[in-house]
Image (cartoon, rainbow, N blue to C red; front, side, top):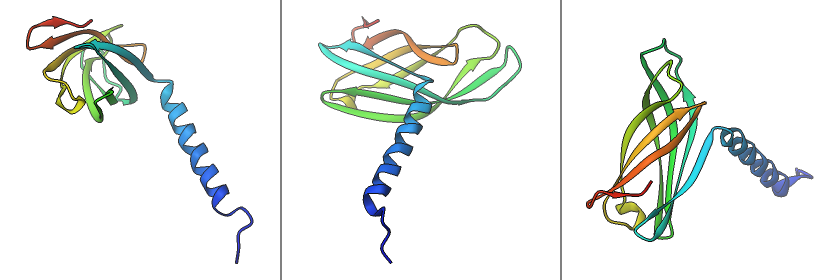
Length: 132
């Protein structure tokens, strides 16, 4: 039996569902570009879930992190531990740059505020070079 909609319909349905998922997550995403050794490094953080806790306790926030340059890119899932009940809470994260075609480590201070994760400051080592 032949379906009148066939493969084109299936392809369209899959594309629309993927777009819908990206749009839904996009509301909790941040994206910015940092200049690292003369190359733009795009970083994005998409919050997928957080666990409600009482004020002053750890607040686990599940995040999809994306890093990309013209030389390479990678994504990873992380659970960042912020402090619940604060208007803004910070964590430190180290990102090895080898997978992006760069040397060194980016030391990031990430801030969680208003349900979003953003880069507050960035330091490149070796050399202790301030990026942001």
